Amino acid sequence: MAPVKLLKCPEVADILSVSKATAYLLVRDGTIPSVRFGGKSVRVRPEDLEAFIEKNKTSDTSMVIPA
Picture 1 (tube, rainbow, N blue to C red):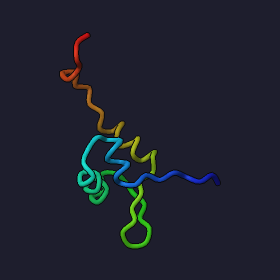
Picture 2 (cartoon, one colour; picture 1 turned 45 degrees about the horizontal axis):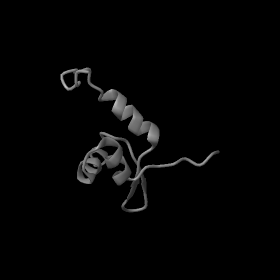
Picture 3 (cartoon, helix red, strand yellow; picture 1 turned 30 degrees about the vertical axis):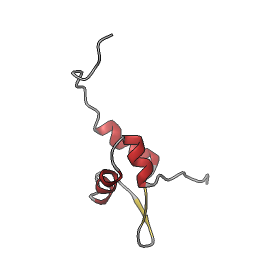
């Protein structure tokens, strides 16, 4: 089995362009599934983060900058 790169919450925050606190909240409340190790270590599988992004995509084009 190939090793899996798990993401730390600060990495999730960078990918989503949100604060670390927001990333931790999304993980803590289960909005983004996570894997816990020991007491406080939390990691996110890249495929779970991708699924979260896909699920929360919006088709709102009001933010599109005209060419």
